[in-house]
Image (tube, rainbow, N blue to C red; front, top):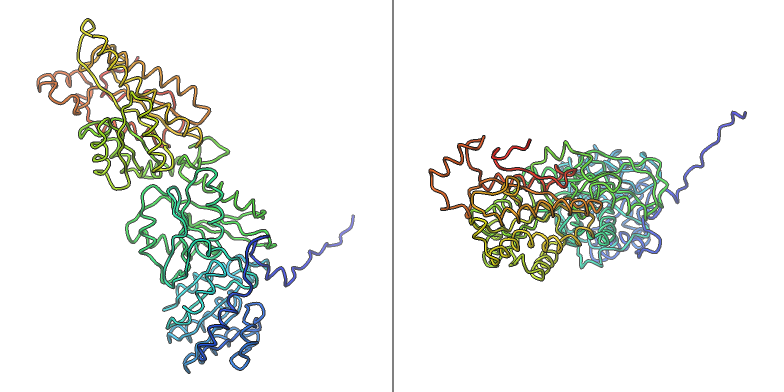
Length: 620
C-alpha cells in the first residue's frame, strides 16, 4: 500500500478572478474602468491608485488613458489608503482599488484613522466581494460590509451588475466623503436594464412587486433573487424584489414601507456573513420602527463557475449562516425555490416542505408566532353582518396577518365591511345558492390576491318553526343557503386549492345538528346543518390526498345579529344556567375556532368537528 500523498491541484489565477456571469448571460466588459475613464475626462482632479492589482480591478484602463494620474503603490494596502487620504487632503478625488479583503481587513486602521476620521473624499473600490472567488477565506470578503458599517461617515455601495456600476461611479465621485464600493470586474452581467432601473445613491428600488414574498437584496444576490422570482412564477408564487445597492446610509423609508405590507414573507439575501451586513441592518430598522414581519432563512447559493472550497451563505433574518454544497446554476435556483417553500410558514403558494407533511416541523416556532395566518388569503361567506360570526372571523384573521375576501349577498355591505378592516381587504357580492355567482366571486378574489388559502363557509339563515309548519319553499330556502351554498362555494374554490397544492376549508354547522333541534332553528335548519357535517367529512376524505383539509365548527347559542331580539333576558338567563360555562357565547369565540382551523396549528386535523358551545352538548 502506497503512502504517497496525492497533492491537490492549485487553483490558478483565472479561477481566482472567474466571472460571475452564467453561460449565455449578457455581459459588459470592465464597466468600472470604462466609466471611470469617461468621468475622468471631465474631472481632472480624479486620480487612480492601486496596490499591484490594476489589471484585476479594471483600473488598468484608467492607467492607459491617464498615466500621469495613475499611481502604483505596490503590495502595500496600508500605504495605498494612507496615500489616497493624503491626496484627498490636497484636493484630489482618489479612486483606490484592491481586493476587498485587503482594503478592509488589512488596511482597516488606515481607512478608519486617516480617511474616515478626517472625512476625506476617498473612493475605495474593492473587488472580489463576498463569495466571488475560489481562493477561499484568505480572499473571500464575507465581512467587509460589517467592518465598513462601523466606520464613521462611510458610505457603502454594493452594486448588482454592470449598469449599477456604470451609474454608481459618477455618483460616488460627486458625493463629498469617503465611499466603500464593492467592485465587480471583468465581464460583468447586465441584468437591471430589463427593469427600468437607474442607480440612485442612498435609495432602494423595487424591481418587481409580489404579493407572496418580498426579497430585500443587494449586490449579486439581487441577480439571483430575480432569477428565483421568475422560476417561482411557474408555481404561482408571486415574489417581489427590492434592490438595496446602498447599504449605508440605508433607505429605511422604502424598506419599512415595503416590508410593512401585510401578507408577505420577508427574506433578505446578501453576499455576506449574517453578522453586520444588510440583513442585520434591515432587522434593526424593522425592530426600531416596531414593524414585525415573519422572516425566512434562505440559501443564496453562488454560481458554479467558482471552485469554492470555503463557502458561507447568508440570509437576513435567520441570523444563522448555512453551509451549501456546490451546485449547478440550475440547482442553485431550485435550491432557492425549495428554501422559499420550506420557510414560508406553510402559506399555500409555497408548501412548508416538499418532502414532509405540511406543518410536521417547526411547530414550536409556529405556536410562538402571534401572526397565525400571516401571508394567507382567507375568503369568508356571509361576513358583512356587523355583529355576525363572519365579520368577527374576518377581523381576527386580519389581526393574524391574513388578507380577507368578504362575500355577502349585499355587495355594498361586503365592500364596506372589508374597508372597515383595512385597505388590503376586499368585499364581493355573492349569492351562495347561485353557482355562477360563487365562481365569479372566487375568480375576483383570485384575480386580486393570486390565490385562496382558506375558505370559510359561514353563510347561513335560520327559521324557528316546528316540523308540521315547514312548507316546501321554506325547506328549499333553508337547505339552499345552509347546505347547497357550502357545496357550490367549495366547488368553486377547491380546483384552485388543488392547483396550489393545498388549503383549508372550514364549514359552519350547528349544535342543533348534533342534538336534534335548536333554540332558534327549526328541524329543517337542523337537517341542513347535519348535511353540512356529512358533506364536510366526505370532502375531507376525498381531498385529503390533495392536501386540502376540511373541518366543521358547531356553535351553540351565540349572541349575534341573528339571535338579537329573539330571546328575553329571562330566557337567556335560563339557557345560560343549563350551560356548564354558565353563559352564552359571542362571535369572537367562534372566530377563534375558525382561525385555529385555518392556521398551521391544525395542519394534521381534517374531517373534525369543533364544538363551540360552552358545554351545552358534551359527547359521550
